[in-house]
Length: 384
Ligand SMILES: [Zn+2]
Image 1 (tube, rainbow, N blue to C red):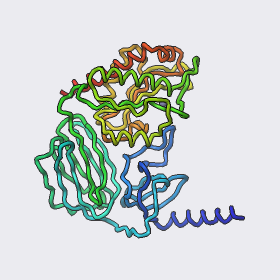
Image 2 (cartoon, helix red, strand yellow; image 1 turned 60 degrees about the vertical axis):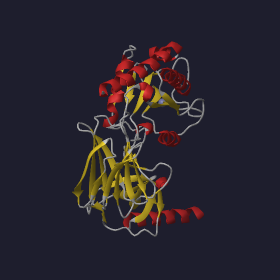
Image 3 (cartoon, helix red, strand yellow; image 1 turned 90 degrees about the horizontal axis):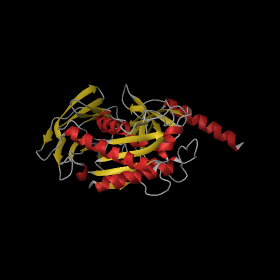
Image 4 (spheres, rainbow, N blue to C red; image 1 turned 90 degrees about the vertical axis):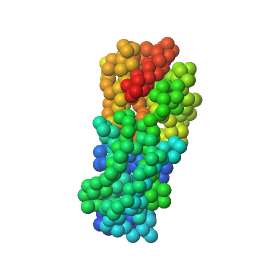
């Protein structure tokens, strides 16, 4: 009986949510939205991570996601765990943008835009020329004042465009071809884009490099077909060699884990956000149901971070591994941050006998470390 009431209650709730928008705000440790309802091993295609407290209108509900209306013509999907109702919020059809400020401090450049409300945003990277493009949904231009100070080092130009009646697009053109990353957040209602600068010296020894050993603890990852070795142990062995090699070359290293511990993706992402490295490399081992599939591959989500992954792949291929490819638009959680260039390396396949033999060899771990170093070095050289 109790169950029946619950079913009726849920049904009423779902009909309400399908008809009357429910207003609320983003919440949780690392909110994000999906473009659509598509799903695969890593979940649906994701937009950038979002700040908390962002005003959203729920217009529909499916499974564990809400459909939210971003603007007249745009909708997206927000995990239910990232939504909390805000009964006090009275959303307006559109909000007016205020004045901007473009300045720098000792570490970063900032572009700040005054808004009357925390509105949803979507960001993308463009290359040739390198630009950060941000759409603010529900915003209409009333920007009559863009103050630009000489304290900036990476921001070359800023401007905006009213893309649709209620979609305001911001362009931030960068001085360097390479995207070094950016972080979008709200300071009260001020949308803040913190832009990372190109390091003054493009040498490995001047960089803060983060290395992530995939899996760990109860999350063992894939296992070897012949030897049953576990991915979590070998990603750590390889990551430690990479750490050792890069330290020897003078870089400042940060490891997301140093031992066999459980570490979730949100934890890793937030730890890395705190560290804010110049570069991040995540180490994994691949697996396929087809034992003949073999080789090495690198992955990125955003186009501005592609060059790093290409250079690392080229050096990995010098080890005589098969080319499994350079993969873009990848939906891996650690490819999601926009704050720093990052590269996922799937070193080789645990499901392929020849690759597995190499993964088992400590000499191979050292070779991989050296090649990752060389890849980073090549990439830096290409930017000079
Ligand atoms: Zn893995």
